[in-house]
Length: 173
Image (cartoon, rainbow, N blue to C red; front, side, top):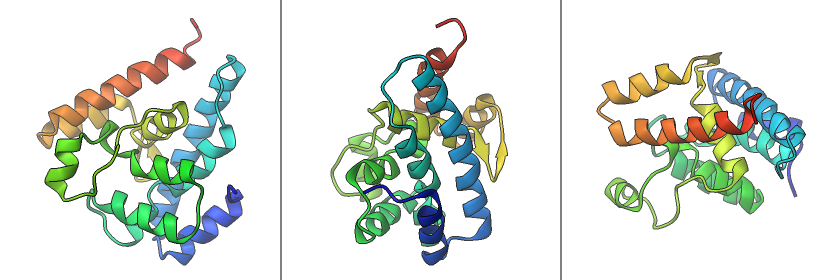
């Protein structure tokens, strides 16, 4: 069963997430919810509550590490907390526009799919790339930062998710 917003925030606090991480998660959840609401109004099948709650919890692994490995830590915390599989999946695939099997192996992660495939997964991944600390930023800033960090493949994947979601929510569609 999907936790409530307050239960999700309590889980972040109980997991010892910092106030900054919680503020980031709340900012991502706001954008993700807005995006999901637009998709729903356009007739797309999207679970708006799943998007909001998963966006709140997407960085729960940052209670353990601020490296890319927060994904794996977050999945472990979510499983121990008994969160539903769709929430765990969103936590698992929110980073970098997706992580390839080769990249996951290089990182020492368990085998699995680390690419957002559902609309809910894509919305949370997209919203996360629009927030730095707790401030909304242009997608171009995220892409520029990824390129500066020599993460060109991640930058390209973020651009693809941006293009896909932006098209879904544009006023022209």
